[in-house]
Length: 290
Length: 236
Image (cartoon, rainbow over all chains, first blue to last red; front, top):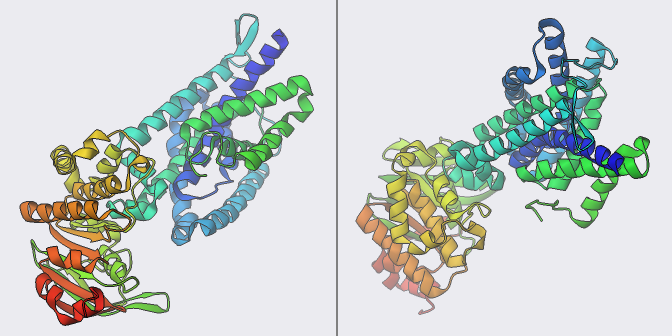
């Protein structure tokens, strides 16, 4: 029983990370129907940047979040202008297809550049608190995992408040519901999309930093995108709170699978869940589009 | 103050408007009437900047708006209440109204505007925290007009507000529009299939047929003209 509680709590802590992994992708898809499958590669890049900044300057990864977010925001801004701006005029289905193609290209380019520059070796940032745990009722919880959970909750609450309490946040939601009606309110839809897209990049920075604290290599880009897509489907399009719940749910399902069947099959359960949700509840657990 | 001059509009290769000219003076309530598919909505979309004319000019206070982006035209005070209302259905009544006052000019006087909208449509205040999608059709139309008023319009364009609403509600809402036009000096252009209703309340009317303006005059004069009687009021 204790063994199960241990595996389940690891599952939840992983799940919080999955929520963060999916957050940026979910935001971008919700606002402008761009399927940014390169999101996992962005997280991988952020992990490398964190790794090298720790290696050379001994910057604490959690503090480094404050630097990596604006840097990735800027990267998103530039890539939107170069690659994604021209897709704005297409109808919904075309947007999904074209953005998917461009993003898949980016995913391959970023992953291969990472191998070229930094090799395919596994790396991890090892801080003073790496490997330290806190024990509650016999269940050991690593500091880093708890830090990730706390970050996930803080970031999702902050994003929720931004989207519901500020004029610009409300404009983002209005654009996600109806581009033309938003235009008629005097909202510059292009600019809102540019900012939301860049924000999605900035949000890749946070799970990137957390990923750097575990073992990682360039190939995790694909795994991370995979997790993000599963969480997106679980949460449903347009639900920010659903992303955290979806992430935790995925983490718990994986943990249960590991406990019942075995570690090698961990990835399988997420994918089975993905298929089941698409078959029986395609709007997601908390989604809005039927 | 507001002029559409010799405007042609096309959807791809298909021309929808030919040489359309309309003018509305400050403080007027004008109506553009015609049957389904005549091009009424196209005219409003061109004015709001959602469609760009192939030929001709559109000016507000002598400033050319047809070259501007649609969101900038809203900042000029030209506000369209679109056909089908186009509310943000999953946002609350209050949030819809707040988004209405998004542009800088409107944001300053937001609270007074909100009070005014609630005094014009008291039902909206009762529904303030409900999501827009849960309102009845009439309430949704009121919210759409309220949202438009929040943008502090100088020229309010109203597209087909009678669509899908009970006649009594339509009459009430038109009465309210007339009130807003008279007491707040908002210039209004309505587009309407219900020819009799629109021409009755309008100072000035235009008739559009197959993408061309075929008649104009005072609302009352048009209503009593033989041509309108024959074509639209089945009194020929």
